[in-house]
Amino acid sequence: MNASPALPPFLAACRRQPTAHTPIWIMRQAGRYLPEYRKVREKVGFTALTRSPELAAEVTLQPIRRFAFDASIIFSDIMVPIEGMGVALEYAPGPIIAEPVRTMKQVEALRPLVPERDVPFVMEAIKLTRAGLPAHVPLIGFAGSPFTLFSYLVAGKPSKEFSVPRAFAQAEPEIFARLMDRLADAMIVYLRAQAGAGAQALMLFESWGGLLGPNDYRRIALPPVKRIFDGLKDLDVPLIYFANQCGGSLESIATLDVDVVGLDWRVSLGAARKILGPARAVQGNLDPAHLFAGPDVLKSRVDEVLADAGPGPGHIFNLGHGIWPETDPDAVARLVDYVHEKTARK
Ligand code: 1CP
Image: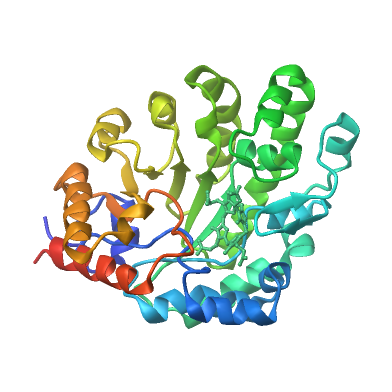
């Protein structure tokens, strides 16, 4: 099979079509490991940055100027639409909610999201970024999954275990279900608006779903995710589900109607592909720690990921989670160049 000449490699890989090389981008590719990002952040706070279409477009484009990435992701945060729903929060650097949402009254008081009214700057940033990107670098729009957003809303701050929201989901099933519904409704309109503005793929971050056992995952995290993807399937854009630490729930994830499943480094891409089946591409899954290895060790770690993904189409190289702020940008350059070189096909 020849590589598709029409589609950028990232979009072709999402559709499991052959590509001239394995495409690569990395989660949090715009961020604090880049000196040019830190320079922008010296002058402007994170919230102001996400609300300025010009600055958001600028920091989205920074990693694209520096590295040969095959995709771009709009600079924003999963909590931006939550602020749009009327929840006061700040970043330090993770999201801190002024009044954690824990009552039915608070859930009902959330404003149904109207993206054009509540977060117009996101769509503006998408339009500006698209205009500044090369044609072969598609732009990804994104949102947080209901369970991940719920975790921050109820805990009120980042947490390793999210014990408060996990206990809440068990103790207050009615409030929990209503909140998850409200979040799913909002993320459907939010992602649709991003596609309308020019996002060429849509990604849902299930960053904390891995805290759930497989039965809870299937019972409480999966249904609203299914509803979100069902609400997007008429759009002609690939859908990506990043299932962080959800290796124990892959059988459930295999029932989702998505093009790509993003995986963290704790699972084998090959084993995951057996469960997810041939109809899905995979994205991942180098350990962000491996960017701290010397050049030769890094190459051998990359070789392991590529071997694990296998020779077939439908692999998008990425880290298994966001890049760490302490990472040397030169290691990223080596990573991108090596993935391209190693996977070059005629
Ligand atoms: O100080 C700063 O500059 C703020 C740090 C920061 C950045 C760079 C935050 C606060 N958000 C972001 C950008 C961001 N967040 C992007 C776009 C950049 C890119 O990928 O290039 C994206 C896609 C996100 C999504 C996001 N925010 C997720 C899902 C991805 C993941 O890492 O699992 C999550 C969980 C968040 C919450 C959040 N926002 C910010 C931080 C530091 C966090 C994590 C907090 C925690 O550890 O719980």
